[in-house]
Length: 146
Image 1 (cartoon, rainbow, N blue to C red):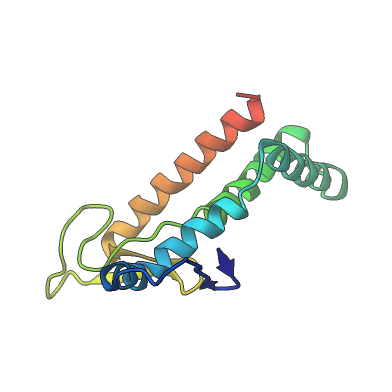
Image 2 (cartoon, rainbow, N blue to C red; image 1 turned 60 degrees about the vertical axis):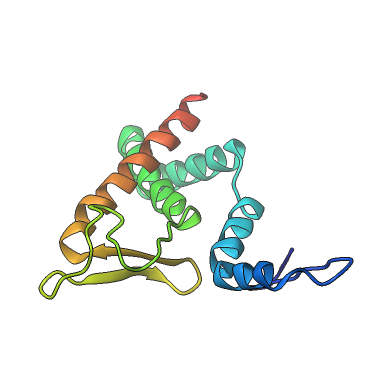
């Protein structure tokens, strides 16, 4: 179970050393996975957020409804990306699969809290564009009702 940013484990007896070692090596990924399921938004949450953002843009911002909905979708995409972080182990670019080279360094993108994804700097724009497109597709399906 999660205890803030830590993993709290209970067992009837001490687990084998290899289990403790594996848990220690993969603690960050386990905590990220548990946190993401604990804080996952429902379809109703996404619809409420979208409607609220669209309403604010339309009524307070004076935008046409179509433009307000486009802005609301952009806001939801950013929120989805924040709530669905991606982590990858160092050593390989998550986008192209290539390794690090002298003039082609791998760079960690992300935060300590959400974890890092390792990419070549030249791969970031395409990787991020793919993530945004995936988020927009997922959210569009939710907002259409299926």
